[in-house]
Image 1 (tube, rainbow, N blue to C red):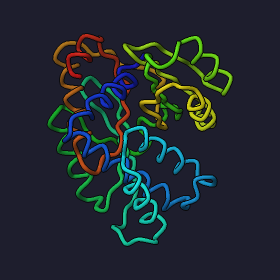
Image 2: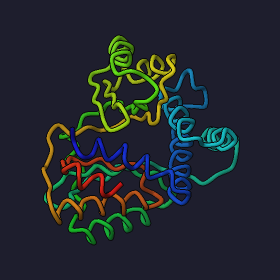
Image 3: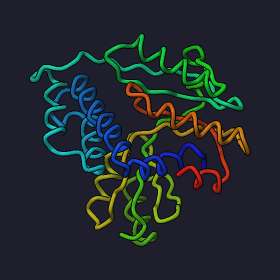
Length: 248
């Protein structure tokens, strides 16, 4: 499993901290607004919005925040004008980075990203420089204490899941992009607790990092996540579990 993939789960756990939770809520609300702006406010006709709402609810974002975010996206409630941008670049050890941004000020966003990358021996790259090495898919994390692995496998595989991996106290389900909604819906019909459900970018190959380089990469991921305009960060690193767990 790539370090990037496991990092998504660890990052979700870290969001239990109040200050982290506030940032997580803000990012989830921005995603709902962006999804409604591009595809409308009808969840039945807008798969991206449906996914964004499901992810927000799984993270306990208040319903009122969700409703207002949809209204801002559809223009029925005043709000800042936002745009979506994907920046590509490199981290320590040549790790490929895909940085999704939702912002009302792209000059501020790119300046913050450049500064953060430079601080941890990374750099911005040209458009298309690393995108070819990632596949779009669905990522679902399920509490292992709420469902047996065999039961989850039967339900998820029947709905179209591609792979299921056992983590510490959780199961990670990977789905093809076009089967994500089906798999999430199927899992939600069971008593399983879905801790995370999001569209993701899984790297085709990974760069193995160890020692100081691995620690620097994790600090870079944390620093990028702390930026208000950065929505998601995808990377193709592979890091030993003991270093990952120490960062949790």
